Length: 257
Image 1 (spheres, rainbow, N blue to C red):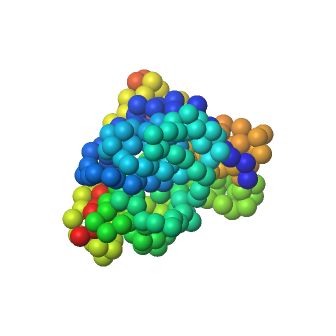
Image 2 (image 1 turned 120 degrees about the vertical axis):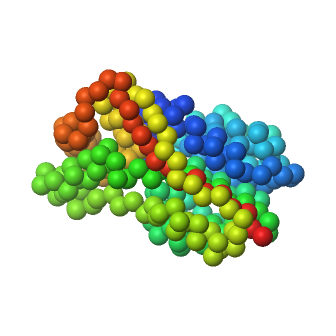
């Protein structure tokens, strides 16, 4: 499968996507000589902010998208570096003082197993900070499922439908506790986005959710998928301008006792 991630498309809503990162970063406790890793670092601009604001001794940004890493290359230096890697399988020879992941773990299935593996990467007394979208029940996401399951696209996708592994907030609190993060912060937060129109919702999901379908379809098929999605969305959302787009996210932080 080709790399469907397009930095320019993803960053059309840079400010809206950045706020949850800064809210998550605010939960992290600054400590001296911090060794951090940012899993799913994207273009690296926010990873650079993490590295700077926490005065990290070293920070590693990891992403599986070559296009994102090409843009991140301009941030390298002063203890900050990037490498290609998959969050679903990432391992390291030494643990980190901070495992940080912003808007990435929603792509990895089986979160109890994922968080157990991430726990093994946290040094004694270290911290885990994770932010993930929890908007899978919004019409913008349900419309994509409806199109994927339609008679037209189900055969082209081989029956594939994007399944979201995100759990309820209280389940993450229990999971963190069971993994040794007794001191923790878990919250579900709604981010109110005021977009120009309903069409901006299409542009939003083109940079994230719909990439999962784009990489499974030919260019012509995805163009048709996108038009079907646009029509389906019009039956679920009003045509208000400006358009109010509430977006739910989970923010998790814990430190090992």
